[in-house]
Length: 378
Image 1 (tube, rainbow, N blue to C red):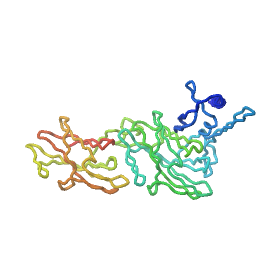
Image 2: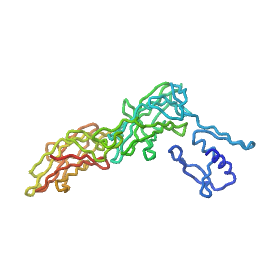
Image 3: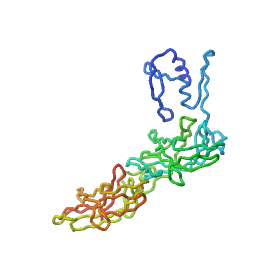
Image 4: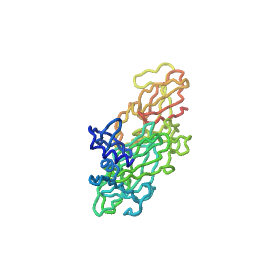
């Protein structure tokens, strides 16, 4: 690789036709000027070494290229004095990252979740094909002057089992306040933080990369095998002993709370009525099924609640889908449409039209692209 880079640098003078070319450096796309000829791309070695965190200079008189590779990340005390072999990180160890304005970093723990993760007013939610990797870490200012840190002071990339890079949400939360973390750290001051990476629902995430912002220094790599707290029942797929696979369709239990997009939902019970709603008339043998659901707004801000916030799919013994009519208040037959404040609970009833001779047996709750929760109707 080094000989190839040297040859390409020396060949630049005799070639023409620069083109903007995208290269991938440690999982990050960077656009550089390159010469494309005969199906090959020729990069200037000085530019390439800069992207890799090192330097390269060319002595024209001596026909010599001097290369200085990137210094390895360091581990140890507040000053980061012990070299980290192979740039591999260990949970709980202190690492000094960034060549300019260094920042001490500790990865404390990690877990998988399908629940909403809030950072201030923002709420991060996985879809049915995702789970989330939550990272808990701390950063410390080792300088003698104040140092401003925020979400892009360090960058996080999770490499999944298919060797695909998954980028973090470009947001840090303060562990204490749960608000976005943006502050000036005083000398030696440390703060605990967390961030989120959406990853595939199936399988482990074997590797994490921590990258200094603005290509400012070497990368720190963590082996996540057996280091991430797994999912639990009923979200976890029982066929995966690692707890790293989230079910897309989850068997639900009455009275249990489940994450459901911006809300948490708890199906409390079922009841029937043969009394018409408002001025509507029921056909002979027709009735309504009422599903009582407690909904808690788990977003970081007010959320609007109305009939289409949920998608209840009720099927009968013949597998026929029954008609969902409306979302009603808990104690009256009035339609419910209103803002629900952050962390507020609201009990509602979902009204399903049941034709004569039909027996409902299954409820599936699904909202948008989120998971589906299935309940038996008894």
